[in-house]
Figure: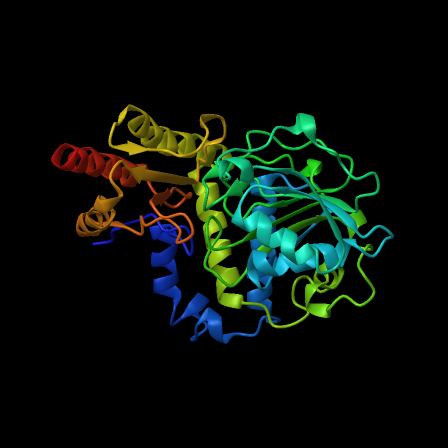
Length: 359
């Protein structure tokens, strides 16, 4: 029996997708071998790649003047790729919002290649909120503006999309495909797959055409969005199995009703858990109510000495990977698309019972 997996990433995958992959593992499409064993340039695999792109375009209503890229290295590689691809058209200054560990990693990497103007930071309150836009001081010549719409560790999600002058860049690793996105407001969207898309080892990039000619001349070939776009993400051998599985997830999402259905479900799941936290005297959420994440819900016990007992009993109850990130401690429940409502119902019931027994 499968248990409920609340891992922040690599995260839960839809069970129907896993079962289909299991059935096809040894004999894919009747060709007598696995999808992992065929050439990425074969006619059979070309169909997989093209269909995955089209399904993603359909799910997010991606305009025609955007290229869809399937990239290696995860979102972390894009921390470097963003400045490499955008600091070559004159300005080597970029604006960043600092809202937690992932934003910080992106900032540190960008500073290796140019100047970073931190327009706002939530560090003053331990990254428990999303800064308002009224006090920003944008750079007059910024090559781009970068932010992290959802911080998986702190559990903070922006309730708005920044309105800025420079091309808007977003690390949507933990929120992509959980709700509709006005793609046309962004210059580049990137997302590691291992949360809402598929297994680890691949990332998705959505880049506006006019940004493909702004790279630094010395950019490494493997980080170039232009080369990736020209080669249909196959300039070198891609992570074919991760791409194939991501395509199966896209099909599953369409069958569920697409991102509109996922948005409705995410509100039900997170709302159920936050409602319990708000009425509990034993558990609490450290995040400002105005910007609580729908995807990652950190919470703490009134008595931290009970943390280990909570985690042990939760695992025994079939509730996995609830330990908070090592940098902040406490607990965290990640509620990505593949986590069913039944999982959250089971978690809330367990937490209520644990509180009654230990409060």
